[in-house]
Image (cartoon, rainbow, N blue to C red):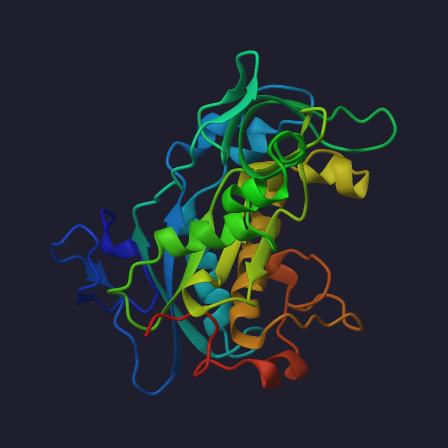
Length: 304
């Protein structure tokens, strides 16, 4: 960890030493033995801002407000709030992001890309109407139907496993086995698929949790570059302002972390709660029903 003590914890002001990914001591907020605690490992994609790129769908002004430490501080403060939150102290440690090393993809005639799971270039969101959907930037590739058509299913599944296997691989390779009891959260830029004719389409949601696999392949994702672009495409609204983007980013981060405590369930009958529809985190509450389902002891994807 390479930040000051003020970057970490739930704001209590106490510090302790340990959990240093670089091999040296670092400051942390001290956990309380009298309260429930949730420990998170948080990895942010290197040079994530470089993936914003250019194009009508981009929102660089909003994305410029993205800050990992600020987001985790806001989420930790929300979780620890005894009135609006869950009464859970959330602690986190940052570690180095490790990209999944994919083999090159060759479609023939010199067409392809250096890594199966990494693409840089033109892409388009699938949307109706006259909303600009073009982006020239960087993204994670999770499926490639053009490659499937070329090599056949047996060879394809070796590269792109079923059921969001690329995302699970990202979790597995980034998980630090020395961080006992920690769940994993990855901040990455975008996720996209390749169509049969080679078009690249980013796809939503811009945040998700994997909770249906083996322990080292469970965890949470937030794609802040993609989230900064979502409002015109998903909700027919104006592009997010920096303040709006941060609020939805913080709520989405808190929401996906909650899935690691209570599984896949949502709260469709509630509005303004953590597990219902999107809301500003500053206006959000954890309902009593949601709180009753949160299981800190048996959290999903924690290292053992």
